[in-house]
Length: 467
Image (cartoon, rainbow, N blue to C red; front, side):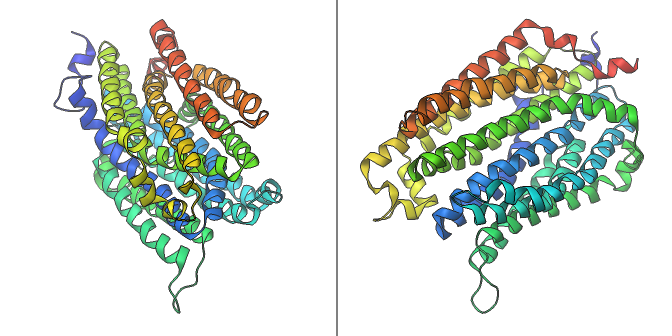
């Protein structure tokens, strides 16, 4: 009987089934939704505060996520080793890879602080929203190590499929952010000064501080110390190298991809306020709904990693089918947000732009927004399908392929066409989002082809190297 059949199951449901994936992914989705809501709530408050503040947050926030996401993707890779150790029933080794990533989070301070103090003014001094972008970017960078610490510690729970604790902590962090956003952005007359975009950045950062410290406290609880070795805090070079070898390609790709999207939003800013405002709205909705993609990605990665750790991958095809079904069902639900009736949602979120003097009271502008949202819907759907295949490749350690294919795709099939077509010929914003939709579809095809080739199996089984 295959070892994958006799290992301790993650859930009571059949391996690779839709029910197992939902059981693992649903808490991750809720946790991700709560975290993404911090960004989205920032955007909602800033949209009411100032359109300039909103657009500055989109620009500077996208660049900030280059570094947030790059380090976060690196340290989150600890969950792959955790899942493989868990599948192999080597429980006392689980704390070691998490501590290696905690050390990476600590050392990231020497990167983020200079980035905040010296690089931000160089990047944004001559920008349209320069002073606002500098304030927002600097504060996010100063607090960024706490976000990296949070992603490091999340791997301890994600890799073992024990994700429900992440929901409560993320919801509490989101509540902290929402309350502080309202106070810090608008102020309280006679009590607390109005801080605008600076207040939004501080509120979001304090939410991440809370998440990191709460997870660290739970990580060091007695039962975790005894069973999972969570006090094994020494730097263990073989494990650290393994984590870096697994995580660095994916981290570098993630950073290069986000740099590409930063360039995209700068290009839209250079064209017109309509181009960047439509893009800001599309991105804000996509960020809010990205929780589902993130949850499935982590869920599939956790389940696949446990299968691989138990030296069996016979259920991965079934797991992929379950994940794709979930993604398609979710896409049918979010048709409402992007395609069917968007005005009431957009009016709720961005009331100023749909007022009598707003940008989208002009019917031609609204038609451009509506069509862009349709393209953004398909973009999000294909992105979800791409990340499902990516999660299996990551679980198997095939991250070098993801770095090469992903980097060439985002620059060659997205940014270059946007510049050559939309920017050079000053075309409407819809052309840029159409290109984005085509790019996501092609990427999905590339990742699916890599999985179908079976070459990812040649790179995998990290634990096999120890045998």
